[in-house]
Length: 111
Length: 114
Picture 1 (cartoon, chains in turn blue, orange):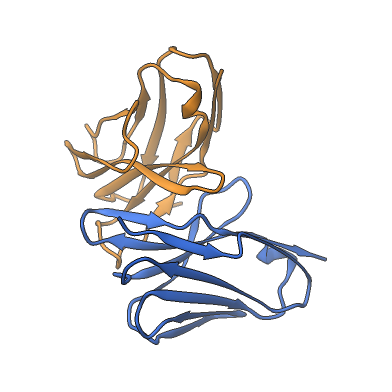
Picture 2 (cartoon, chains in turn yellow, cyan):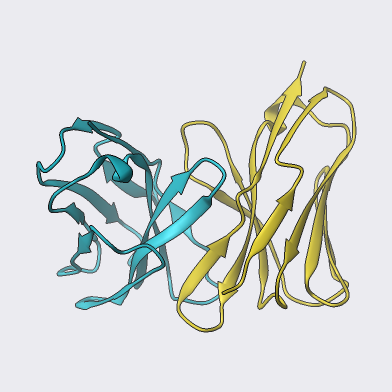
């Protein structure tokens, strides 16, 4: 069974700081997805990456997929309070029709 | 507005009292799924459905039932709830079961079983 490990578990920073969170898989990703979950809401998809070495940017967020497709990072530049939330990485399980999630990194950005 | 709607948002019940959490999507999605979210464990899949009348177990199906009689609805049934089913539950749907088809989540149902 594939396991997704995210680090750090919790991160509290000041507005304007940069940060990076990580996602590591026990096996090669089929397709890596990053979701953000705000308090009281369900997760919302941020990005999907498929190709090893791929880099995608979404405004101040930069997503990087490892060459071996077993790890990924999410970098946020100049964090804002609106970035506060739980960041989840996920993968499609090739053995079945389901998405596997990591436990997430809980980010709190103080104004 | 395209959305996944869960009801209720909050539910407190007692051990053994049957309950149903409803889930409805208005996007004509084929794939629907239920997850539970617990601190430190992330989202774990309970059941999923590829289409009408097609359902299958996820990673933690014990104590739960589902049905998919219509494409838009996918209710989660707890026949005899127990305290270890206290959790935050999410319903999700996608056009198909593919990485090209992202999951759309409801806003969750927080269940407490005493």
